Image 1 (tube, helix red, strand yellow):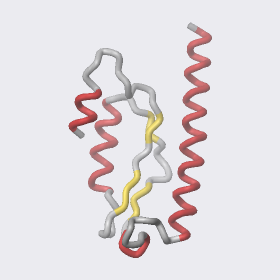
Image 2: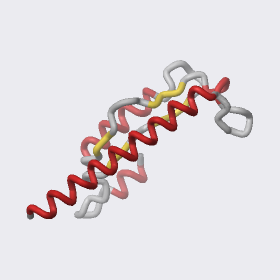
Image 3: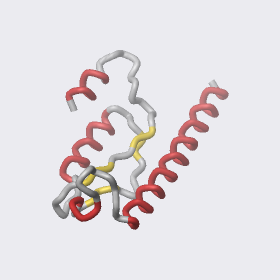
Length: 105
């Protein structure tokens, strides 16, 4: 969070209008939800454009990753891949909107 605070100081905001997504994994059942929700609040203040669904909060990480941190749970891998495809689409949509707004100005 401190890095976000420092990066948000310049007058021209580097975060404003940028696509964003949160994801995380933890050994507990909540899968980083307690960390992600405050980050989304900060991101709202910074005018980040969050992809709201699906939320990626992977619980039970010990069963989904091996000892080296590699994802070994096939269903989780498919879910993450789908999320990244949706995020890429969201990024293109936002970029197209920026171009359209710039053409009108």
